[in-house]
Length: 166
Image (cartoon, rainbow, N blue to C red; front, side, top):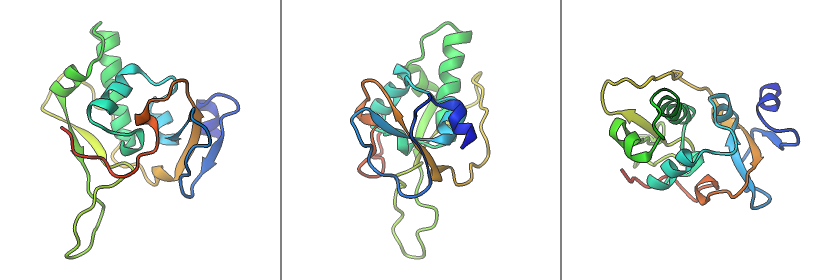
């Protein structure tokens, strides 16, 4: 809880575990604590929102490593190369991958995961850094509400799993 308090504005409603309820007003979005740890913070960048829109994803479809990939990409291009990050450049280096449920069982149809079901895979070796953790344990249990200005519909809770759109 202390980590969350250091990463969010004072007065932010924090909640641990349990089912993720719908936000209580139009300006609230649900964010995972691990997303804040890897660098996501309001106001969300136009690049982040553009990626969500381009691939028809909601923030909750992403994993912590996916958020880190987006943050590193944006930082690398804007700070070191002097180029505004864009979805077109991002697509050149990365492709979206949709992850199935962990173990559907014998004979069961694989189901797409609603939370954390999408990650981006590099298309090849390149100059971009990849600073990711191998595994985030139980990251989806630690979430909080954040109030944002002009929230994109793609920051809202999804109605289901992501729809493949590469």
